[in-house]
Amino acid sequence: MEAEAISRKDLRDGISRRGFMQIAGMAGVAVGVAGGIARAEGAIGYHAMDLSDEDLTQMLRTILRIRWHERTMADRMLSDPNYRAYNHFYAGQEAVATGVCAALRNEGPFDQIDLVYSTHRPTGHALAKGVDMGRMQAEFDFRATGINGGYAAEMHISDPSVGFIGADGMIGPGHVIATGSAFAFRARGSDQVSVVFGGDGTYATPHFHSALNNARLLDLPFIYVLENNLYHQYAHYSYSCPHTDIADAARAYGIPARVVDGQDVFQVYNAAKEAVDRARAGGGPTFIEAKTYRYYNHWGAPGADVGQLGAFGYDPLAITSFRPEREVRAWMQRDPVDIARDTLIDWGVLTAEGAEMLEAEVRSEVDTAFAWAAEQPLCTPEDGLRHVFVEGEVIPRQIA
Image 1 (spheres, helix red, strand yellow):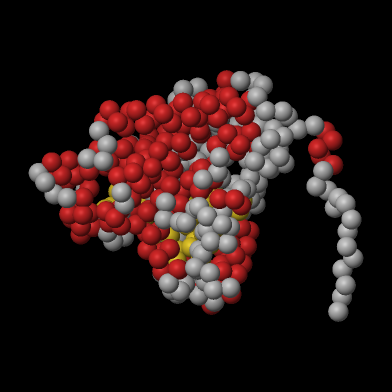
Image 2: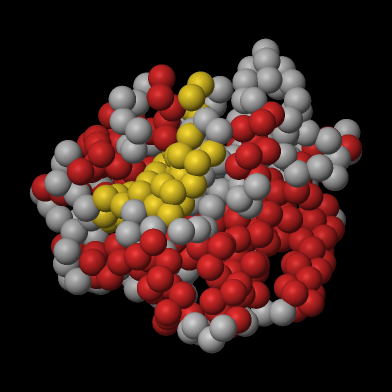
């Protein structure tokens, strides 16, 4: 039974949010999509029933903030020859970052908040964790007032103040560092949780297996979120992975693993909430595989048109249009924005008019962030000499 098929009628007839979740959970979900399966195991987002309307609305707001930041950036890259920034776009995957980070502790002193390690596709993770959009965009534009002083650009942004430890231009090394943070939490008796996001391409790296092995051996408060968007850059993930579900590899290490529909923020939140609760209680690591899809090509906006969501044309970096247009459009039929908005309307959390107003607010916020970033001073050539050598007095190390 499809969740969409029962939601409107049954909720209209008086079934509560809790009842809807229980029915959908018993039914399960299997969503067939050209080129892959987005399959959920177990109940559908039933922990969302414990959230307030404000928290649920915030989830939709976060998804919209990520989406419109991405779309605005893509349009600038396509239309403005003076625009300096670039991006590995996250559009299509917004529900994963949003659902996971909604289950985390994102505010408070650094020694109390949960930490997130990102990938080279970091914008969604950063915004969902609480990074300031304007300062992040200034960083992407190589502005001196950017969140990392113009040194990080896109693939190395970080903001420890909100627990976003950073993105990484390589494939997977953050996984090992994230287990180190998890070990530190356990060693000092903290109930913090360390989360790392990775793509399906990380399966073929040693970091993937090293992180999982250590997390299980030491029962660390560690959550591995694998965003399976089907493609390692330009090759389907099946070329390097023998598993339909990469989660099977985590189960081989004895780690509890869940496969969720990464297009549905409530399913993602459900799995993340259970994983976080387990980690805080000393139950060790969890692996979450979110079946999802990126709407743009691997890097930048080739194949896209201004004002159009997604890329459907030739990608010169791949020397081909490597994904069938039918596949891209099939996945876009289950868009994270539509699913979150329609679900909240079905639950009575928002009206259709209220959802439109929310999206208008977000678009205004994004425009403001881009305008502010464009006014910030650029880095100077001399800035390249900063942070290379230690400045000031260096106290000699004493070896006992």
